[in-house]
Each structure stands twice: as C-alpha cells, then as structure tokens.
Amino acid sequence: MTPYANKKQFTEELRTALQSSIDIVETQKRLCLLYETLTQEIPCAKPFSISIIPIKEIQYSFFYTPISKEMSLQALSITNTNYQAYLWLESQEWVLNDYDRDVVTISEELSKTPLLNKRPENIRELKYLVDNNFWIFRPEHFPVFSPEKPEDTDEVLSWDNQYVLAGTSASNMEIIKRSDWDALCRRDKDW
Image (tube, rainbow, N blue to C red; front, side, top):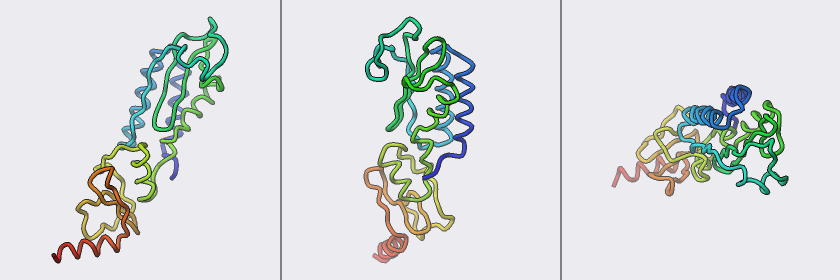
C-alpha cells in the first residue's frame, strides 16, 4: 500500500488550522471539516471521530502530571480504526499526546494516521482494508486495478490482472484467480 497523493496537502491544511486558532471548539469544527473532506476523497474510508472531551478523561493515560492552570479543561479526541490522538492546549500552545508541542510536528504526526498510508494497489490490499475496518463495504466505490474486465462481472466487486474480488457483502468476499473465476462462470452458464 502507498500513501494517498493528497497527504501533503492535508498536512498543510492541518498546520494552517492549528496556527490560526487556539480555541478548542473552533479548532474541532475546522478539523471536522478537514477530516470530512479527506474521507470524501476516499469514499470507502471509515469516518474519523473528532470530539471534545474533558481533559480529566486522559489524565494518567496520556499525561501524568496534575492538571495545571495553563492547561485547557478540554481536549480533542481524534479517532479512526487503529488510531487515537489527543490534542489540547497548554500555555496557549497546542499539545499532541503530551509529546509534540510544535504545530508543524503535530500536523505531521496527525497525518500519520494509518488510513492516509493505506491506498490499495491490488485486490489483496483492498480486501485487507475492508476486513480490518479501515474501509466500509461500498463496492460501488471500490477501485479496479486493471482495465481488462473479467468475462463475467456479476458479484465481482473489483479486479486486478490476476484476481477478482467476488462476493455480495463484507462477510463473504473472496479472492479468486481470474482464470478460475472465468471457468466457474462458463460452467454456470452451461448449466
């Protein structure tokens, strides 16, 4: 799998959003729009959740010091499949997961979400994304990896040069060699 082409632009837009505001509510709205735009560009992507939570909820799991008067009382929780980040203010500066305090670094770290690094290049990778909940089962948006269609595309969700991804739901998807698929379809037609 490879990173998405717009990852760099997304990182820049995150940086701009964080540099332009130190208000939790306003930043949450801006980040929601950015992540929503991102998932529109990846139509099968499982949506991100960006919520405002009390800072006390992450005390002792992401930072171990007492809550100081320099810290915001709220934090942003950014979650997606196998990804969770917390963003809050401390001394009027953004802090990510109690490690990063520089907006450029924070933007780069937020862009490391697994979803942005999982653009499928073949059928096996596509199936992996659906099986592991990075993508939602939306076959009408699945990419194809070869211009050459299989002989029969009924129940074919996608294909590449060697395989088809066949099925009718996420639970019954199966990778089948194209030659085996074509033979199966010919046999079914002869019945």
